[in-house]
Every structure is written in C-alpha cells, then in structure tokens.
Amino acid sequence: MPRLVIPALLLLAACAQFPEVDAASRAVAGPAPALVPLGPLLAVPPPQAAARGAALSARAAALQARAAAAP
Image 1 (cartoon, rainbow, N blue to C red):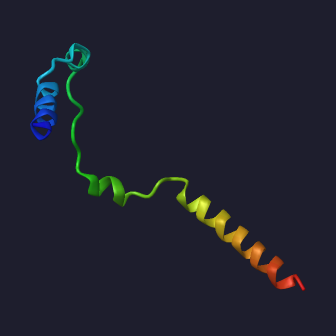
Image 2: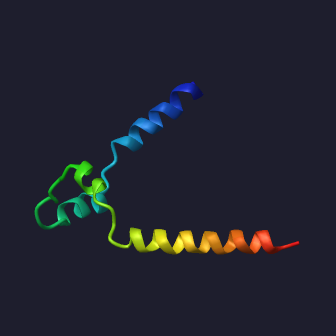
C-alpha cells in the first residue's frame, strides 16, 4: 500500500496549477530574439585580445626574469 501512495501523491502534485508561472509566461512582451549561427561570432576575436595578449606576455617575461634572478 505505501508503494502506491507516494506515486499517487506525485501524480496529484504534477496536475496542480501554478498561476504565477502561467502569468509570467504570458507577461513576456515583444518578439522572440533572433537566432544567429555561433560560428561567425566565435571566428572574430575580441578587440582587446591583442592588447591583453601582449600585456600577459610581458608580465610572464617579467615573472620569469624575477624567478631566474632569485637565489
């Protein structure tokens, strides 16, 4: 008997109405956003990537020089 009670309660809970969820889904205004292919977006590097790369390389070189100078 207890084996049937838990699934029955779960089924009853699944049939419940949630007005907050229904109202929120209807409240979304405007058209859906356009979907674009991801490939072209990933192919273009961010504009700061080159500057960050140069700064990171300089910092790495400074740290390596500092490590080499340490006793």
